Amino acid sequence: MVYSVPLIIFMDDVSGNVSKQWNKHHAIYMLNTNLPREMLEKEFCVRFIPSSPHAAPMELMHAMRESISTAADSGIFVWDCKLNKEVMLIPEGLFLAGDNPMQAKECSHVGLNCNYFCRTCHVGRTKEYKESEAGYTSLFTEGNLRTSEEMASQALQQFKTALCSRATGKVLAATTATRVHDSTLSSIINTLPASTESQVRTQLEKELLDLLQGINIHMDTPMEILHTVLLGVVKYFWGQTVFLLKKAKLLNHFQTCLDSLDKDGLNAPSLNADYICHYKGGLISKHFKSLAQVMPFVINDLVPKSVFDGWTLIGELVILIWHTKIDDTEQYLVKLTQTISNFLNTTAHILPLVAIGMTSKQKNGFTVAHRSLPTSKTIPNKLVCLEFLINN
Image (cartoon, rainbow, N blue to C red; front, side, top):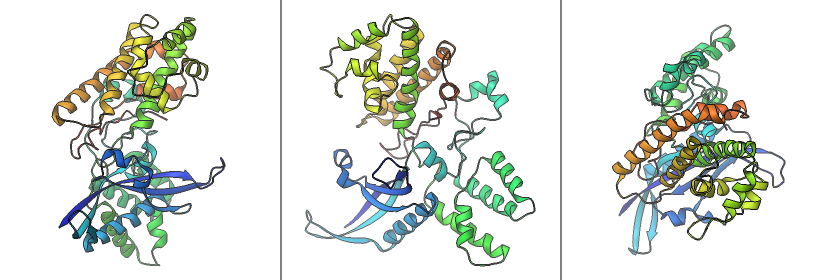
């Protein structure tokens, strides 16, 4: 008997110190998606792989991929206690999880602060174009999808440019033009012995193609909804709603309404109205997840209708995104896509109303809201391949 073992591969930067002093390490973890969802949430089902304060993220990812490929080629023989016989396991990568900055590195993408800000497609152009009516409208649709082959070709071209005179300025210009910033280039070059230019280029091309083999990195890095939705969209909506309530001197009234809300039907931690209103600028994800579900019942008649409509759509969106079981995938994707489109349209109308008092970072979060193409390539883990590009 042979079993396939699809793996969720998660990489992030963490601190290596117990104290609050930051000591940056890059670490990779794995989860076996054959396990039930309830088991995946257990700490003992998360497998720690490597960690290093010195190796670049893509160096660790390359070593991890080699380990998985070696295990897949030879197979892993274990004893099945149910079947009472020996079975073989074949591991394979399902997708790469992480926050937006780390996934941008994995896609060899510059990140959110560039003209073409999406790691999945080619949406965007110059700042002047995005501020025009046609350019702003284009941010709400997906562009041509990026491909691994295109990224590898551009990375190799940058390597060729780096060997020319005045390479620093030329490589920077190439990075700006192509939005490709591959962290593997320097690490690969530094580990190669003294060789001719053709030998280095051949080895570099082989390393890049080996790293990309078997995955589409631009589609296999699904959106991380914690920072993008709860600590992005919901957090900014909350901040500006509080601003409007304070301006209208209705914050105390809002606190009374929130405190009197019947919380018996909430499958969430208790909403402490006094804590939420007192520490309104220091809330965490669990508070935002609960607020997203109850705000429409609390702010009715306290804020303009457009803001109320925005919170209503946020509540629908949060419920859809945190679905744990999907019976009809096609119907779910249609409803999810429509809800995102409605929310983006509502946000575009709300922006002039809530922009007063917003920081430039928050304005970028509202203005640059982009939805990439939903996909059912991997169900249900990759249903939400949707990107609200929030500068967080």
